[in-house]
Length: 603
Image 1 (cartoon, rainbow, N blue to C red):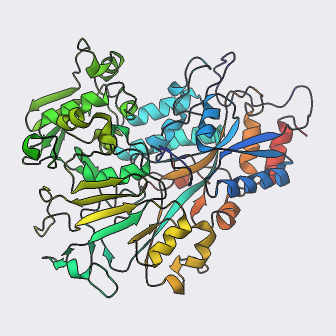
Image 2: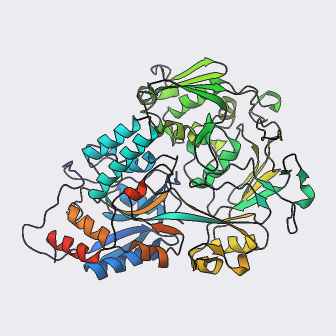
């Protein structure tokens, strides 16, 4: 998912999940491999041309990182880099119009599978015409061997074998120097001392249904807490801030992390992710049956799950969820609409999905059948794939695949951006645009903990929107927030002592809880291929740029402990089963970088 502009970005898309890393160019399409030109200049050594590095403005450390890279390329290669800052939307408009040759980009995982990153370099995403948008694969990398490895991996059901194939694909693009990896984020968060059970994982995937407050001095919720069996406590309002306002809470339209984290409390799907391991677990489907060839998924639904009470229902009372609701939502997911951001994840995977979508889906009464989406009975729902696809279960945990009632869509239409009706542990109570969102406990929630306690524990959640991180931190210190997600880079060493190699809070912050997690994100610089200026078509040039960057220095002095060096591939080393550290990436080697640039035919 592209990330918001203030941090290394997705779904840059949160993955915002805007998925708009698209390039539009004109000219004759040569369809070369990314490594189509590997030799030096036939006309002898020439001066290396000035290079423009495009970054989006308002991105926090983006400018600092760009200036550091600019200095390294000048000192180590003698290459002059001009930094062009443009407004966030203009940044991507320039990519779409083919005006950028070298630019910043990033990705945060939409689902916990390496395919989500390798897919950014999948050749079939590149259109036959350079005048057409290159969706997802913004660098227009094309390598048949890479594509074949990725496709084989996705057909492989054995996890160890699949991870090995992913690794081999990642090594192929590394050997081609398809991109310039910079770093992988390490997210930090501060919690008030009384917060318990707060989710910690590599995707910042948060479900608040099991978060609770422990009574102690300084906890403003003490009077509202009730002890439960098993040492848990119910009550209290969890307060946190988001530095950007959410764009939408409609499941099909959630394309950024702010909306993602709120809608996950309101809506649910067939499956969810484990809060610690990110393994796929049952949600509204209590069991899943998978065919031997891994193409047919049969979901056995929980009985008695009800949609939230809402005026869209007769008498305002939510009704029971059935397989027909999932059928309805998947048919909507496979229907073209400006508000539908999720169709690309399933259109070519579900049997009949592409034909249904191309025929305008539910908007066309003559659209073909959709055999891959089937209601077996009220409590049994079935999906059939065209072929095995290893990442499908992770995709089913995304907001796009969550269930919502037909009545809500027919009542609110596009207003479902701020009118949410789901089955989750929290109900939407109030939306004040650009100010706050309030959620309250769902009294009819189906979930219970291991001691039989009704979930969620909290009475509600209050999300505010303060854009300035220092102001947010001050509010946290004053007790107005229970969570401070991400630490201001310029204050990192004031808050965290990393001198010993272990991250510990400094004395002024020692009363708080510190969590930090290597995240499923990658920050990188993209090269445009084929490059009309014929600079980055040469693999030797791309390799030289990669060897000229001191990534450890970048992380030590610019990102200051909030990232790890991008010494591996495009897949961050945050996936437990993925052998990222076996990859042969690019170390800092300025002598080799200069030799490669000379070999490429430049002075």
